Every structure is written in structure tokens, then in C-alpha cells.
Length: 456
Ligand SMILES: *[C@@H]1O[C@H](CO)[C@@H](O)[C@H](O)[C@H]1NC(C)=O
Ligand SMILES: *[C@@H]1O[C@H](CO)[C@@H](O)[C@H](O)[C@H]1NC(C)=O
Ligand SMILES: *[C@@H]1O[C@H](CO)[C@@H](O)[C@H](O)[C@H]1NC(C)=O
Ligand SMILES: *[C@@H]1O[C@H](CO)[C@@H](O)[C@H](O)[C@H]1NC(C)=O
Ligand SMILES: *[C@@H]1O[C@H](CO)[C@@H](O)[C@H](O)[C@H]1NC(C)=O
Ligand SMILES: *[C@@H]1O[C@H](CO)[C@@H](O)[C@H](O)[C@H]1NC(C)=O
Ligand SMILES: *[C@@H]1O[C@H](CO)[C@@H](O)[C@H](O)[C@H]1NC(C)=O
Image 1 (cartoon, rainbow, N blue to C red):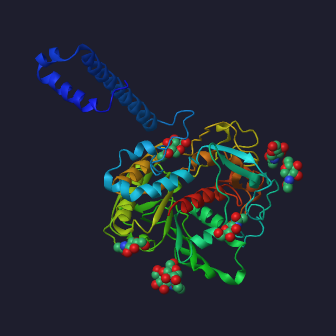
Image 2 (cartoon, rainbow, N blue to C red; image 1 turned 90 degrees about the vertical axis):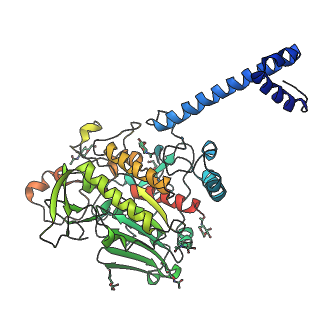
Image 3 (cartoon, rainbow, N blue to C red; image 1 turned 30 degrees about the vertical axis):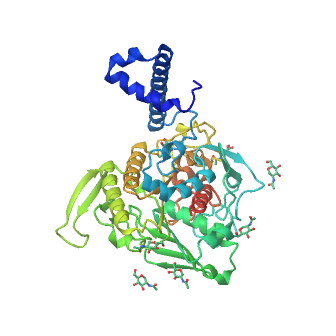
């Protein structure tokens, strides 16, 4: 196809003529015609190949994750667009987003597929007895756990390394800023992990911990940085909103109402949400009207429906009230539970009790994690993304699924005195929801850390 450059426009011109006037074709030299025909055919072939490959790749990304293509840049709608993707970005978007997205792309890969590697050299990231915020609940070691191997596992993503957590660097990044976790006790678990991760770098006189209603504020005074937790287990208003007294027989949600909570989040620089386990009921009672008013209308709705309604209220609020250029938003995917050992072929008890090793089976997925609820979150985030509001989905479900050994089990504070009968059957009161610290939520925070740093 080595043709002199000058000839190209002419050929194009002739080509138009071919279509318009067949007679002209006869006047062209035969070799030139053949050239035109073959380049046209070549173009067609290239086009077909392009279309097919584009179709192939998109359908791969849309479908469920195929066995080996875990590095798919589209596996999370929150991940930065790949080179291929940038082609579809409109011009205006491109000018605004390119340097930032490029930056991210370089620094980030799919952190969510990989394996746990035993590493007692660099883990745990802090001393389980040294963190002053662990005493009340999550420090399994304090509550008598003997086997400490759960502290020594490092998450190794398949195609890259997680950056090493640096507490000083994070506090510098958070100077004059607010990092805020919002959600249920799993998010609280993660928030405490974060306070423990930075705790040892701050002298006692330069930090404080305060609680006011649903808001818990850890402050690094020297940095004027806060790491906060806001209790809102269903995100929307509910009868479980008391941060201390929320053991209920029946759950009621005001799925249309979020303002009472959300006004506390407005000015945060980093917002980390979660909400899952509290929705795991067959039906949710939804209230139209207020809790105080006798005229409220109550209706039982199916779990997925209720979740969807709450997510819509949540996303509407974000869309209107969050300053897109200031606040970075994250969603923690479902935290898995390990309540049925038959699912992983366990022998040492009916649930996570007495488990000391991670699950080795690739892509193990327990019945405690509901994919249809995950799909609802993904759809909500995708809708927001189309409106220009980017939510980073931290897809930590799979990596946490492997960690049947990481739960509190019986090594926690018991709020009620245990009876003799209970004591004789410890698995009966084992907590297979929350996680020991140091432990799995530290990894969630390492991933969050890398996202915070890869943004400009
Ligand atoms: C999150 O991870 C799960 C399990 O690996 C996967 O099925 C799901 O598609 C992922 N979601 C996103 C948005 O990447
Ligand atoms: C790390 O684990 C190995 C193998 O279990 C053991 O021999 C070694 O003493 C451990 N090192 C530390 C620092 O705990
Ligand atoms: C941690 O970050 C601080 C501030 O950016 C830096 O001075 C220090 O060298 C870092 N430490 C390590 C071990 O990388
Ligand atoms: C301290 O941080 C808050 C945000 O959390 C900010 O509004 C305030 O201006 C900061 N104070 C100073 C003195 O910079
Ligand atoms: C607690 O929060 C309320 C509003 O949510 C506020 O009016 C009050 O001043 C706060 N109290 C303290 C001690 O910060
Ligand atoms: C949004 O945040 C940016 C960056 O902090 C700031 O410059 C801008 O004024 C904010 N916009 C509004 C409407 O507050
Ligand atoms: C815990 O599991 C070990 C084996 O992994 C077993 O030897 C031990 O008896 C179990 N303890 C209880 C109390 O079930």
C-alpha cells in the first residue's frame, strides 16, 4: 500500500465518482481501480474487526466477571476509564478529567482480586494492645483470643501492590479536613481501625475523642484533622438511630427521610458510606410520616424494595447537597458474614467459631452476601456517575469472604452475663459479623488510603 502521499486525495475523489458515475470507472486505469477497490475492502475489513472487538470487550465487561480477566478496568464503575474508554468521553469532559484520570490510572489497579499472604514481618500495622480505642469491643486479643495468626495476613492484589500505609502522610493529607464514615457497626469497625492506624503517631495530648449524639469525632489537633463516624445504620431515618440502644424486635425505616442525618455530612471532605446488614430482613416496615405523629402510615415492603428506596433518597441527597469538586465519596460494599461453616466445609463448629485459617478456595462466596443488593448499589452509583457525581465503590466483599478466621467470635465484650448453658456452647453466641482488630478492616482502610492519595 506504499502510495505517494499526493495521490490520496485524488483517489478519494475518484472513489466518490465511482459511486456517482459508473462511466468514469471505465476511464480510470485498471491498476488504480484495483487499488481503490482493495483499499476499500481493507477499510471494510478493519471496520468489521473493530466493531467485533469493541463488542467483544464491552460484553465481557458487562457480563459477570470472567475467570481470569480480573484486571478489567470496568469491573467497577468507579474506577478510572482506561485508554479505550477515553475515546467515548466527550470533549469538554476530556479536557477537565484527563490529567486526573491519567494520574489515577497509573497509580491504581484492581485492588479487589488477589490473595491473602501470610506476612508476620510487616503485619499487623499496629499493636492490638496498644490502641486506646479498642478496649470497648473489637480488640479480640484483649478479650482472650489466643491464636493471633489472623493479624498476620497481608492482602496481595493480583497485579500490583497496595501502597504501604503511612499515618503521617495521611494526617498531612487530612490537614484542615474531615474524613467521615457513615453507616452501621461495620463502618464503625472500619472507623476504629483507622483511628488505630494513626493513633501511635500522635502523642496523647494532641488528640481527642468526642461523642455527641450519633456523631463520634476523633481529632488530630496538630493537624486540625478529624476522622469521624456517624451512626446511621440504614442511612435514612429509622427506629435504630440511637447509637447505643438499637436492639429491636422490629425495624422501621423512613425511607424518604435523610436530612436529619445528612446535614452532619455536608462539609466533609471524604465520605465513606456503608449500609447492608440491617436490611437483611424478609420485609422492612416503611413509615410515611414522622415517628412522633400518630398519623404515620406503615407499610411492609420487600427488603430489596426498601433498600432501593433508601438508596434513591441517599443518592438524591448527594446529588443536590454535595460539592462535587470538594468531596470525595466512597461506598464500602457488603461486609460478609461467616455463620454457616457447611458452606466452606468447616469441621470445628457450626460457624466462624474456632476458625483460625482463611478460606483458600478461589472466589469463595457465602450465602451471607446478597448479590442482588450489590447490584442495586452498583446501579445507583452508575446513575450518579452519569450525572457527573463519581462514587468510588470499594468492592471489599470478595477479599473479606476468604477471612472466616477474622471475626470477633466469642472474643468480645458481652453485654449480658452469659448463662451456664450458653458458656457450654460457645458457638451459640459467637459474633461472625464484626472483625477483630488489627485485622480485615485495616486492609479496607489501606485500600481507602490508596484511593485518597491517587486523587488530586
Ligand atoms: C464486586 O466484586 C464482585 C465479586 O468479585 C463482583 O461480582 C462484582 O461484579 C464487583 N462489582 C463491581 C462493580 O466491580
Ligand atoms: C513468623 O512466622 C514464622 C513461621 O510461622 C515463624 O517461624 C517466625 O518466628 C515468625 N516471626 C515472627 C516475628 O513472629
Ligand atoms: C511517611 O510520610 C511522611 C510525610 O509524607 C514522610 O516524611 C515519611 O518519610 C514517610 N515514611 C515512610 C516510612 O515512608
Ligand atoms: C480546621 O478544619 C476545619 C474543617 O474540618 C476548617 O473548617 C477550619 O477552617 C480549620 N481551621 C483552621 C484554623 O484552618
Ligand atoms: C451536639 O450537636 C448539636 C447539634 O447536633 C449541637 O447543637 C451541640 O452544640 C453539640 N454539642 C456539643 C457539646 O458539641
Ligand atoms: C466547592 O468546592 C470548591 C473546592 O473546595 C470551592 O472552590 C467551591 O467554592 C465550592 N463550591 C461551592 C458552591 O461551595
Ligand atoms: C477448636 O479447633 C481445634 C482444631 O482446629 C480443636 O482441636 C479444638 O478442640 C476446637 N475447640 C473447641 C472448643 O471446639
